[in-house]
Length: 117
Image 1 (spheres, rainbow, N blue to C red):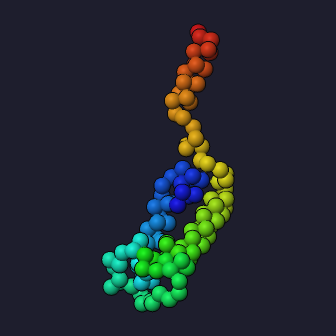
Image 2: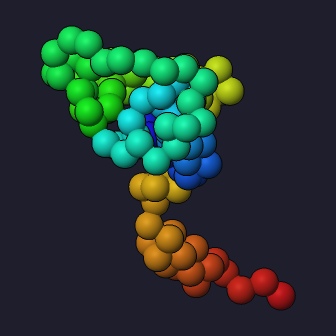
Image 3: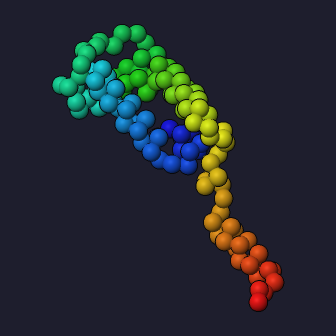
């Protein structure tokens, strides 16, 4: 999620990904951060088998290796999406520029400009 914010400088992508992740977990009968609030709306019923370090156990996939793999793949997909849209791969300018410094630089430039008659 941070990758999407850092590359675009906007919250829309991380919010959409987070909502999509939680919705997918609900639809596939997985707990969302240990909660099973909407298990009645699941399209599939599943039984977790295997060690908790892989499956996440009762907490859900975020607590296991499967969640880690999903997060890494999501970050890679986000980088690919930003690159495909023609964006620069790096921290978005709006996140590294200080508006006060930019404003002060413009004011200095205006003061140094000779008066126009």
